[in-house]
Amino acid sequence: MPNPEFVGLVSTLQATAEAALGDLNAATASAARDGLLAEERARQTAERSLRLLTMLADKTRGNLDFTEAEVLTGAIGSLRARLGN
Image (cartoon, rainbow, N blue to C red; front, top):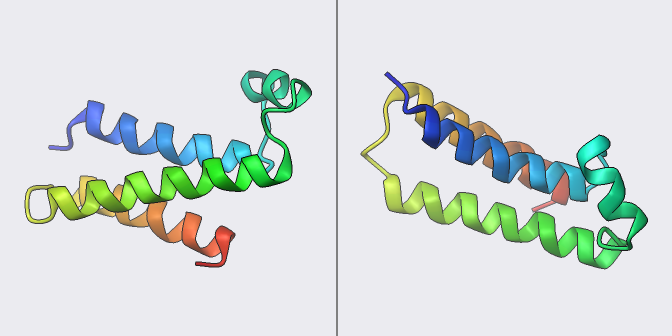
């Protein structure tokens, strides 16, 4: 059974990266308005989230259940595709 906190952490890191890349919602609109999501800074934020997710995958390899591994792998793949990595 997947750990909800783990899945939530992965989802939060992915959502942070996606928001920085332009998937704005009410929670990130104010950050964009304040200049915190300027293009270069936004890319850095997204890349940092990707690095954190990749590190998490490395450190948890062999210790995740199927669903947790699938969520983590999916988040990494999605962000790599968006960032062109």
